[in-house]
Length: 328
Image (cartoon, rainbow, N blue to C red; front, side, top):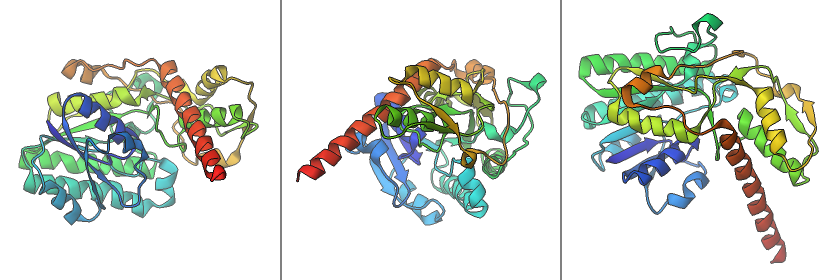
């Protein structure tokens, strides 16, 4: 297949690019102006990358005018909830309007393409215990700006399928982590801080509320689901990608501390507390499994170990660069 990935320089986007290349696909990607491309530095000679702003409709039209794509994955957008809450208008502009520009470009220029739109399990909001694990029939109850934008884009997708016959599939990933994740996110910030403590560059791990529980999968499982949905998903349908279990931030921290090469201390940081918080979230992957056989495969401890080793490697490379610079 020839595939296009919006947000290909990002966390999930870069892993999806890796996976598609491994499957023999021709990979194109979009990247926002000024974004770091370190996540795809190792494959820049294997993909076609276009830089531009998806909130400007002409950019995506220009990209779609260059080649005929079999599958298009729309992953680009603001993904960090506190960032969305700081700039609600910007979040809607990027996540909702940017998504609409992408879909309208596809409707008018590449109607044949299979399209996967990455939504989020955050659209469900807080769900009572007796309705978990959450199924796709659960009504929307977004609890933050990010989730509201994702829910709005999902609503916009439905008439594009029913009225225009577009081949759009919605995926609702629950939390996912792994190497390359930004340190804004809980698993990655804990792993980075453990690595910093090991390197003697930090003397404690700073944490916020450790009680919320989330359903975590490995990013490599999630993006495998994206590609399977491009091949097998039913247009107009939404599919959870989840592990079916939830773990607390406290449990994640304890696992990483056991992996640490030294003893580390923990200290509460009020700046890391969120205003709005869903206390427990876990999803059902029954529907996607019935559709294409997808299920999570990477053990969570392996995910966390790979993430920790990723941060250890980053620190070694930073130290090496600093030594080279001082030697000049």
